[in-house]
Image 1 (cartoon, rainbow, N blue to C red):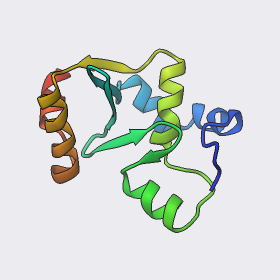
Image 2: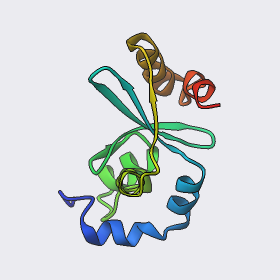
Image 3: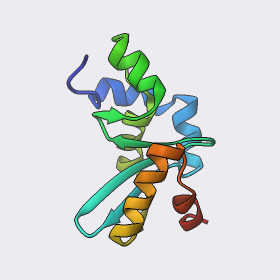
Length: 121
C-alpha cells in the first residue's frame, strides 16, 4: 500500500475521474464539526461512508479491494476529499456533540445517516 495516498500523481489521476467530478458537483463531500471534533462523510446515493482523507474509508471498495486485495489505488472517496478541500468544494456543517454521535451511529449501523441528510436539505 502507498503510504502517501494523496500524492500529486494520485490526486492528478483522480481529478478527472467521472465519479469524483459527479461527487464534487453534487456536494457529496461533507465535513461535520462539533467543537474540536471533525467528521468527514461521503454522502453516497444509497450509503454514506466515514472517511479519513488520504488515509481510510469505510466503503466496501476500500476495505475489500485496497486493504484485502492490495489494489494499488484506494477508493475515490479517500482522494476525492483532498480534491474537494483544495477546490473549496467541501460542504461544512456544525452540530452539537449528540447530533455528531447520532450521525456516526446511523452510518455504522444503518449505512446511511437520515440525520445528516435532513441537516443538508
